[in-house]
Image 1: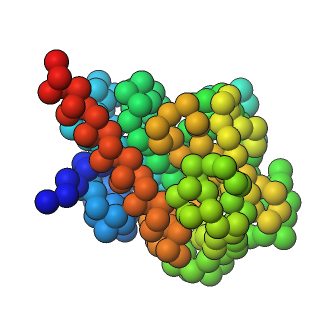
Image 2: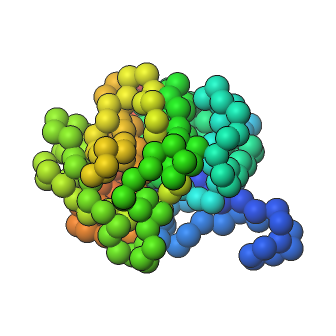
Length: 252
């Protein structure tokens, strides 16, 4: 029986009583979990407990830093809030930075999706456009008006990258688009792996790690088989990580 790697996912947070409860809650969209399962993984969710990060990581073989209705605090990349509708969730960002740091110290596979990619870029010293319509005017609608289950535009895949390997060296793939912020200056050591038709950075990765991949779109919707292939490669990397850790313990 093929081992199904355990994958830790970060969650959304609300304390305004707008959705599930009048009390604060953690939650995550169902298709993040279903995409992980379909690709061969076993998902679990992480509450924001910085002190528990090492314990969490002891339980899993890979991490997905998810997107959501939030923005990275501009002070973390040397700016004040200038963009429209910037919404920060400090507890989430602080937890995800700690989680990313410790996961990379273990060389554990990490997939950053939308806001997860933006956090990854800031972690490595990069910056963000705070509000694309103000700072990066374009004919491309990066907050697409059509459903998220449909493509918004294509992205050009950069050759020789981890992402190119994941999608089978395709030159372009269709993606959905649901963001008002994006990578401005890439962080130290990061490689750009995907570009929108207007030149906006849509994907980043760090070649010094086994699997450190950020995507501005939402592959968990499986807009195309390329999205499914990305999840499968991530789960494959997590399985390899698990086997490596088991071999290390066995040979001690």
